[in-house]
Length: 606
Image 1 (cartoon, helix red, strand yellow):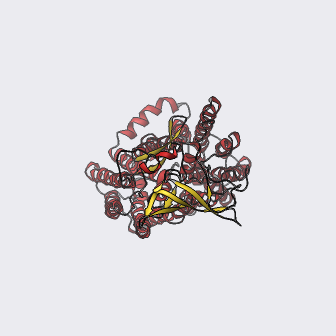
Image 2: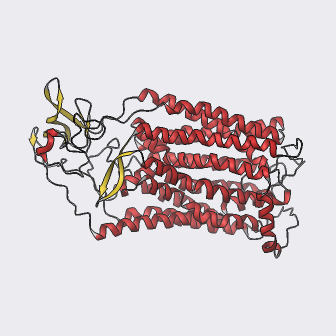
Image 3: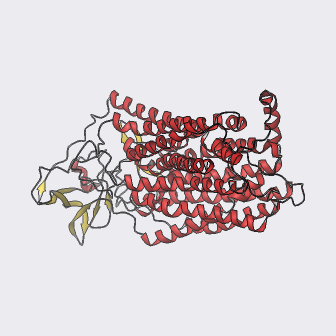
């Protein structure tokens, strides 16, 4: 009936909403390259939606069902749709993407053409260009703030609406479906990113692009996915304006009197924060959520750099393997919990065991990766007297410092540009008018002869580590996710009248302590591993080369510390819980426990 149709609509809305945030994370490395952002800035951008969400989530949770929930959800969805459209706006207010193409010229149709290098123009370094870059960032940050504000009522009001009007028998099924969608949504976002980033960014502005998606200068159509997601959110918002405030089958409980809101708020807040189990579980979840927030934002970039993958392929791996693995872990954890009707201590022990096994599987990831390829003047030099671009063999070439058109020499050394390799001639495919290779390169020597080079990066040379890395990271994610449902059941051990508010406090603390700072801290750590920065108008822009070993240690080390901190906090819970063996499963069945996220759940202490 009406409840099932509402579940369908809300599942579609949650999928569309999470598609926006998941798609942003899938395209974050592309946005960095397009607008010259550091990882710290992109991490701040990715987490900025939590700002608006954090300011409102506790109050929205406390209001509960005092408002017309479907209409609030519809208004929030419209705001999310507007935010997604705004995220794509920078593409339309800026000019075409510019990259170093000084030696790619359609007028060269002969084989063995000579050319001389000229300085790359600084025409882009104008006050207008600087203002345009600031406008791009401002629009994106405003869009992210609106995304967070619009998302506030969607999940709490939707789940509580279903929980209030669905039958005892159907409520766990409905909430379980919605909870599964919250995991699937980001995965669909990454798959959408995998598809859209195969198209060139200016597909609507230019034709005849001579880059391929394997070229390090390639920028995919990051903005297309936001238009798709925004359209889906707008479409899913329409039915909510036609749902009644109360469904016909409603069986309502007596609500607290609204005027008590202001007087009770501080007391209820303090009571929840002083509850030892609640506080320790939330701190444990903060550890884990900070890791997940950072990894979700930069996992694509990590795979691109470590294993020389395209952005499209990296997103496909995340969306098709890692995120479904996390969903499997959550389902398995909930099934174990229901099958054995665990007590609170058993729930805590299950969390510790899952995190410990995750730690064991994550440790080998420290060693499964590739070092940075040998790049002349950056990671490799026959002489230490010369800096980036300035090798003894190319000093007469006057190579522009801003040149970035990587080539791979026949000696398997990468050069930042043909000029830095001292190449003086090019070979073209006459019929295809495309570049074949560079010849007569004075810096490249093979068997005592002047060498040649092919376009593109040499890439890393340890692809045999890729499959073990994907398998181990997926298994570690499954084990970590098994603790998700037990940890929420520990939170539901507080007083029944505080459950809805406690979940709101929990999500506020997670946002303030994990989801907001996590991507920023990860991005800052990643920036410290950069060994060659792109320069735009005498400022650092996007990173061109990372120290892959340091990058891997930063990423995996943080990933190992989070489960350790999480399991340590949960171990402490075993000693702080005073009630002897209270049942983790509620007396009235598992209604609401499956959802376990941000609804006024009907779970009672035993």
